Amino acid sequence: MFGEKGVPHRILAGLILIVTAPLLFVGVPVRIAFSEWFVEWEYSRADFPPDTYGLEDDYRKRLALLGLRAVLSEEGMEEFRKAVLPDGRRAFREKEIRHMEDVKKVLDVFFPLLYALLFLHLFLHLLLRDRIFTGWVLLLSSLFSLSLVAGAGAFALIDYDLAFEVFHNLFFEPDSWRFRYTDTLLRIYPMKFWFDGTVFVIGTASLLCAASLVAGLILIYRRSSSDRILSERDRR
Figure 1: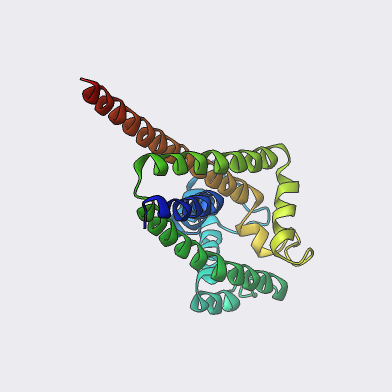
Figure 2: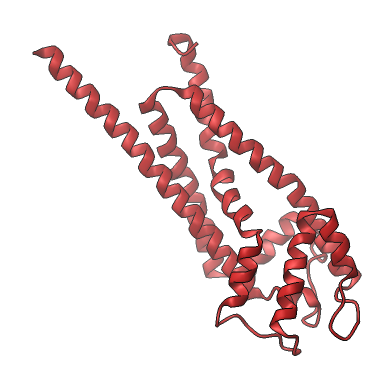
């Protein structure tokens, strides 16, 4: 299969790997960020902004962790709907709950797609078999992904508010994700939380791209070096 007749199959596999690589390089950090350690880390930082309306950080963190569970499981969403503030009032308005339900719907599609893509990449890389070809696929995947990540990162750093708006309008109804400053969602997830999350995703994605780039160069260089050594031996 991977003789001369297998070349088109390898090229097709390589193209699929290159084109879908950005989703994988960005998706993995996103999945890591949607975990309790990130919420814990944010709330442990000295520069994390306090609540303007006096809600204690411990209670904010508790609600923030509940929000995380809400977008990851139906059981968490049920708890989220019933959440209350220290004074006994409902913690979240219906609009806030609907938005979190929308987020859950997106993640219910995105994360399984990410897992399937991860297995697809592993499978296609095994099919490539040729080291130098695999090296070039890794190299081109990294460069393509890094260019997109760098562009998105530059956009976010230049005007984060606009980037935040564009991103949310891409996945949600324009007015469904806008809230009052007094709404609990904005109080437990202030803009700094999202900015730090964006920096984490872009930074981690860049590191993954760099690792893939180095791996590709190593495979290409080692194969080229081996070919030169064999060629010199044949001439002798």
